[in-house]
Image (cartoon, rainbow, N blue to C red; front, side, top):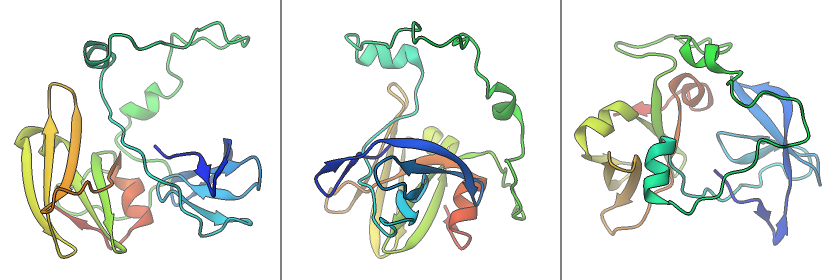
Length: 189
């Protein structure tokens, strides 16, 4: 998840319909620059090279979210469109084991559609299997010259990554094949 504020201006994003290395490119309606969803960076157009600020997010169930935030308001299904919001159009895609247009070779015990926690520090990338972090609760790693602590709270499905000084490290949850397509030399924990 990213902030839409760029250079003190709020931007409005849409889906371009284009893919770059198995990942959807967004566009902003002001400059029509194309943005890599996974890198959070404009890759074409007048804002090329501009980066978006990563915001904290979590991947959780509706039940856990409601327990933690009972006052949450939900958007109405009355959108003015005839779409059926009771069914997920991507359900079959989630069930498939292979990624969309994925071309990289898997290593031992790797699954294309495994969810990983991706981190980039000083241009170096590392991926941590989400299920492994869930099982461990707390994991330690030394990466890019930093001592990292990855803490997963199963009751809220929240993950925090901090360095030895207690500074938060930006991270995202993504399919392994997408992460690997963007950072082919990524390390894996």
